[in-house]
Length: 489
Image (tube, rainbow, N blue to C red; front, top):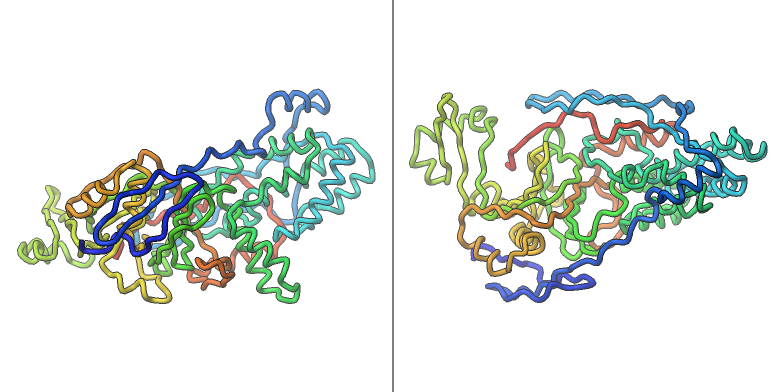
């Protein structure tokens, strides 16, 4: 074989296994592939119809009045950055403040909410953002419309920040990972649950991320003296970043932390394999933050050279005038009917995508792939690409995805690899893949570590935390232009 398929031979273990896989040359692969148990229903989802009917009988239906003013205005869309490439503009969107539903609050529930708000500092949030003084005054005045309005507003804002993150969207640079939690756990449903079941604390607690790094950061915040302002700020903004993602990332998924230059294959909450990565260079080729799905793996991929190289660097004219050189370098060169030149690098060890591509279709043309330039994995700072994620031992990872996601046998996967011919294997079971940006958290050894802010994305988040809380809006991702750079070099 041209390359070892498994440089790490630790088993993939879950609560259940798919059985042992046969041996593969030159090293033995003993992999137990997990079949995760069905996840339980989310307890924080909207209340069932019976509960809703009970609440209406008690307090009338929820209403959604115009949101009350906050100390800072609602954010507006940020302008697209200048670029010499041709960006694809996002669809026009109307960004408006999220409505705040209102329910009836008993004094006991409102007092429990006040206590919960005062405890939000432990979650890296600021209790003052949720108007505890106004809530306490409304409680003192007794049950009624004023308490219903204030308690509902304070509760809704706490829900939004715990579930979706406090940072306003314009401060989340190149953030295109749309969080589904506000669809799965609506503010209205959570308010209904809290005021009907009288479990305000439990409802709010159910919103915190399940990813282990969040709890590790929470513990670190509790252990960090208040005098260490910068460190506490770093912990807070990275706790918030985990809230930008789905609360539950899934049972089998890939996650890469760009500043760490590492990719994790995670099963049942445990990283069972890790891979070094090379990420985008700072600037217009910086890797964006995405939440996509692995839909296919490509054995022995081809690479269509982008026109920025074919025309901009003159590669097309050089190759088409020298067919022997093109063939030697593994390029197929074609003069098209409109006079343009197409250059496609054929499969092989020298292909810019290496011998494996992990396909996760997205508007940014970002994917995970192998590379012939493996020496770069030894660098400490590995920000060299045009945005895509070059992945160490990508062949091993791709085979694992094919076995887990397409029901392929290990022998079949090895056969496709050794054939050295292009083959795209579509997943029958897709897996989430998250491209995150965390500058303080646990590294692959479990040690709490600071990672270099290679793209300068901490500053806007930190600044937003220094400002009064902004009203959440219907914006779900960055409005920056999508820059498509289908170029792994």
